[in-house]
Image 1 (cartoon, rainbow, N blue to C red):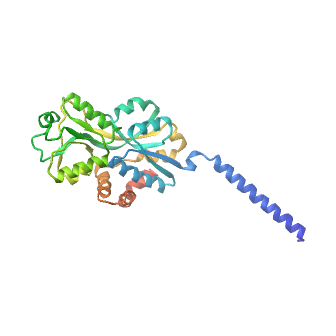
Image 2: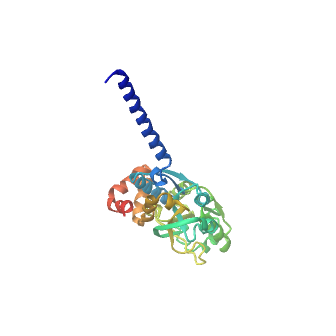
Image 3: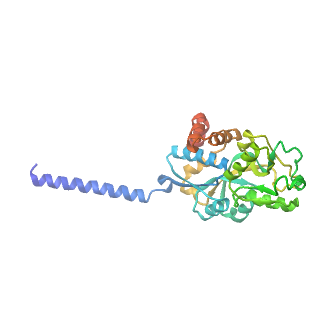
Length: 292
């Protein structure tokens, strides 16, 4: 082959490579959404939702997806799902806790599946507060509780329930909004000092393992009955990401499962390390979520 022929062959080879690259880029840019595998996973900063979101994020990453965990207040979570800015969540507490948000946005959100059952919300006190067993009893001990109920983030549905409880039971109490972490810090300090404190709390939660606590009875039913945690998705998510949708649809675990991850995190383990520990110990369940 002469030099002219060699140059021609090289040029044709380069041209062929460029065409192949161009086709590959074009196919990537026009690939079905599920092949691009970029997911926006919304969650609220409750201990249980931190645990579940980290576990499912690692499971989805194992299945080949790029997952962005986005923590938001409950109201923004529902608004983001309804508007399509978020893809899905496993942080929906229903039917009572986040009823106000579901009533507003529910028609524009897909209810995928229940991922955790037997949940509860309410007001809790240390069990050493023996004379207070009913929310109505709080009226008789306003000064002992310093006239305050220590709450969590102001956007949480539980805070709305607590405001309703203050009115229904005629309590002269102030609901202090803070965060889950701040509430638990207050509870830790008061419990260690054997002081009286009433907090907004929910189950499952590692606090009931760490300390001897009790829910106050709610005869008026302000906090509702049994709750469950629901997986929700934006409209169109199933069509865009059918395999990912199947995984989040199969995601379901027990209170013992979530409690174990929450306890590891509460004891100082990194969130992802705690999630991976559970995944490694529960391979059969994880494979069922991924492969069906």
